[in-house]
Each structure stands twice: as structure tokens, then as C-alpha cells.
Image (cartoon, rainbow, N blue to C red):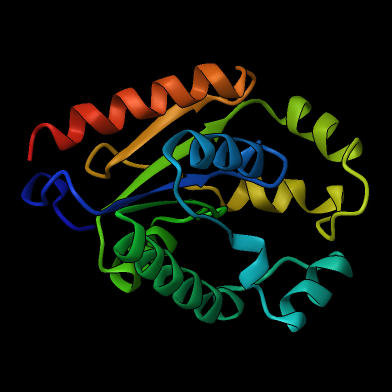
Length: 181
């Protein structure tokens, strides 16, 4: 991971991460509206083969994810460089995935883990019609999830809180970290 303290408080992106159904898309839209910046939906960067695999109930492998993470990281970096900042929604379940996003974005990334218990996520997934990610993949996502370590620039938030409260927490944290730079 890059050293955020060595970066200026300028160009950056916020990446909302977590398992499917944790609220990444909802919060990313809310934050992007508040910040008047682009929002990138990680799901939109999956290949048709990845979508078909997940739709069929099969979890993605690391090999499936590398091109997706590279394309998303590049897009995050480009959007942030063009607009000063950007917000993205991406599962980023493993540290290596977050490192890949950092390497390909070329801008400081702030990761925010939307965390809550399995029962709440299962409830949300059951009430989300039309999404290709079936609820049957929740357990594989939870098993894959590597919560950010202390040396990563990441904030863990309670995904059951409202988008307004979460946005205030995220923006306060980003301001405090960039003030160190």
C-alpha cells in the first residue's frame, strides 16, 4: 500500500468495500453527490464471463479478478485525476485486491469497509431483485473477506447506519488523514 501521509491532500479517491449487499453502491452515490465527483460502480467493470460465472452461482477466482481490478483501478485513477477526487464501490475483499487497486490507480485511495453481521447482509440480498450476485455466494464472500489490517489506510464502519451518518464519518476520517500530509 502506498504511504498516504506522503501524499498531498489533493487528488484522491474513496473506495467503499465489503461483501455484496453491504451498501457500497448506496453510500458511494451519496458520497459522490455530496462531493460533486464521479462515482464508479465496480460491478460495471466485470467482464461478461465474470458476470455469467457469478450468475451461475460460482465464486470468482483471483485469476478472474485481476483484469477487473486493473481496469477498475485505472478508471478510478483517471476519474480522480480529471476531477480531483472520485468515489468507487468495489468489494476489494482481499488485501492483495486493495493493493492492486492502489497500484493501478496511481492516486491515494481511502478504503472504507462497510461491515455488519451475516444475517443483515442475507436479509438485504434476499430483498434485492435483479442483481446477478445470488445470495448463495454470501458465505464464499465472507470467507474471502480479509478485513483491513492496522497498516492499511482503511476505516471500518457499521453498515446498518444511515448513508448520511456514514458519509459524515467517512468525510471526517478522510479530512483527518489528509491533514497529516
